[in-house]
Length: 442
Image (cartoon, rainbow, N blue to C red; front, side, top):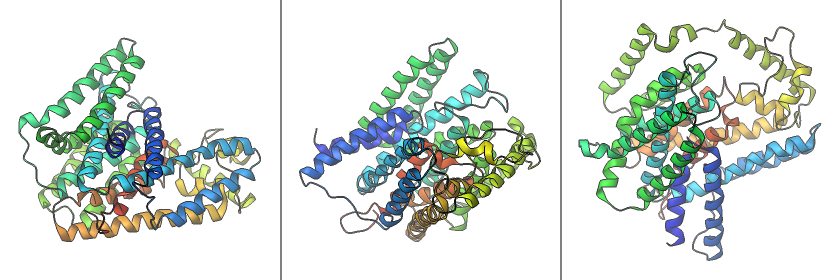
């Protein structure tokens, strides 16, 4: 196998495992970086330069400075290791440039997203994750991570259906989706019988191998199965998002759909009205206690208010370098307001507040610089996609919708602190910068 084929296979496997295993996806990221180094050594590729280089470099440098000036530098530098994940952006910028490869990699992400959302639904109805204090986490460690990834995957699938090439799948084209659903059901059964860990690892390995094989295969049957994936992902991911009972993800998903509609990317008006009708129906029948979650007077909402007050106090105490990465949990008891319901918090449930408290005002500026450049790039490419009509540029619409959702949901949750969400964001952030040799997004 050539290094170029290894690059594509590893990137597809990485995209598929982000929604199901942070360990597997980071191992695949490390292997992908090894392949990149080998290709650089052979001068068969070069590192891409993008408008995000400046804000990323500034954010990385300031984060390391903030860690060095923290009260406990060892703890802060340990948390700063997450900066290594930003290498995925540069891998994806190169790997997503060929239009065909981009289709394969994003299909692999949908494949992993289907597995995650299906497992969440099974956990809700078959494994006892049926309460507000016991929400389905899917294959991930926490329901917030699962809902954040599911939200982005749902919007990517909606964008593929609404703005991508029209697909008329045959029943036989659903074999890939059926295989994933069957395998996830087997994992759920094994989990119920106490063998979930082994079954999960076997499933993750099989999923990664399947994603790589599909990306490297030239068979028309595999291409048709990838194209049919969104038809299955959308209803299952939507229901998984409902049963997650995660309000920030609901708000983010609504914002992502609004971004698509505002750009007139939903070329089929009936699909937009159908989405509105489904949302209204869900509110009426109130599955999973949706209406009970539509409030700002509950304990969780009050706790967020006092968390943000504590975050402001942290920033006022150390406005330049902040408290340091990973230090919010350590210092929170000292800044906690007496009215706050919970005595300890791992983070401040807001991306902006968390970054400011950890890295000071300069760190917040560099973070907003990165977010602004990434979002505007996605917006420009999505506008070009709208003028071009349906076709391979659907990925730009999906990236815009997903990034909008993550950034809006991040006003109520520190979702970029989840490695799974961050890796998916970095993968999608690369889409507008993934150009062919002529400098055009294919």
